[in-house]
Length: 405
Image (cartoon, rainbow, N blue to C red; front, side):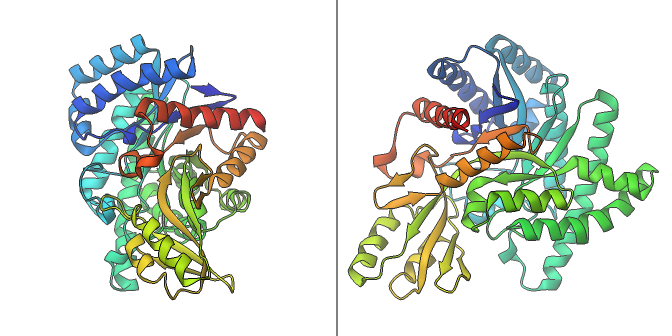
């Protein structure tokens, strides 16, 4: 739905189910309910999470026509896809496997190109579309800098093939599509410095040579095409975890010529570390409620000297809680955006407000806003609402926050 000049929706990865039938069924149930709860009368934007398995079905002409007919009747449209998770994302052990297959593989490239062809058919005329994707791979899979660099080079080769396809789609349909790389803790690209470095040292200098040869254009034109079709997905939760200031990050990306294709509105869990052993013991027991087995919950700690330390998952952080010198932990757990506090815990909700202020001040930063809270099934019981109520409350909070600014 349009809020000011922005397209706002929620990401359908909140719904369990990997097949197209289950994905479609969830949309048919929840899109009308959420529209009704919000009392929204206009066209409703959809942030579609499309798995590999679902994409194989939706690409079939008869299934595409069926979905397009439903979108028209529901007065809804698709403007962005989430193709970070390739396979199972609910009710299974996901953890670091959310990166599999990574960008070193042809499977990831082929799935992404297929999804772009689908998006090109769904996207309304005159609107740009984006797909968010993983930060190349999971850094702990590589035992040396040499192996990591090999993975980055292979990933770059595949990304350039995607750009080549997006240039072709633009020429054939007039629709501008971009792939939005989503940094997250422990990804090969986990913060703005690493994203900028990747563009400046890999994607642009190496990619423009390959693309210029493939398309028969100059390297200057090839570089512009890469910057147009490869952008950033700014997940507020992820950047808050690594303690980045939104205004500084937006300026850094702009200075590097990196566009923001999508902002995912999300909040991380924030915990201040107490001094006393008794309070730390109590804290560890409370944190264990969030240390569930489905998703990876990376922890970034802020120390007294201003330095940072990382734990690959919440259980490893809890093991160190008794003796740590950390002052604060930020935990990769997508908590509901409309709650600032969770008992004795806090969220990074304030970062969302800062981001919304930035985009309202500078609306050219991005046009796509997507609420992404997918952890409802694994949240402690005292935070639960019905799913339709939860989605509507998230969107309503964002809308009201934007009206304040």
